[in-house]
Image (tube, rainbow, N blue to C red; front, side, top):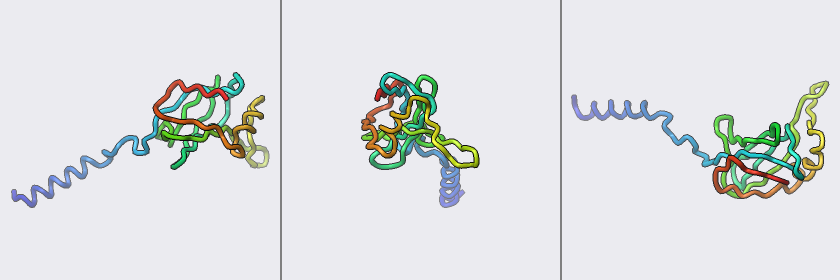
Length: 137
């Protein structure tokens, strides 16, 4: 077998073998999950949006006890490290007639008004992975 043919076959093999071998976390996000409370109370059904200075936001939804887990994409959990603005908003749901309306959990109206998109948000500094983050607003 000549050198040119061998080189071409080796290149083809390596190209096929390495397809999809990129980094699993190209955006450099860190896992963030924990508990959100407001004046000591937890709320289920709120949307949390973590907006970094640069790049796309991450989103989390509060569960029972205020538990949340941030997602950067459907496949990638976490938040971009650095300075982040946290916004707390109601989830949207369809109403009769098809219009979308805010679904604010009972008692969370003040929290959503204070930290919603019309506010300055809440400043966070994300420096590393944190699976037990406590956010008490």
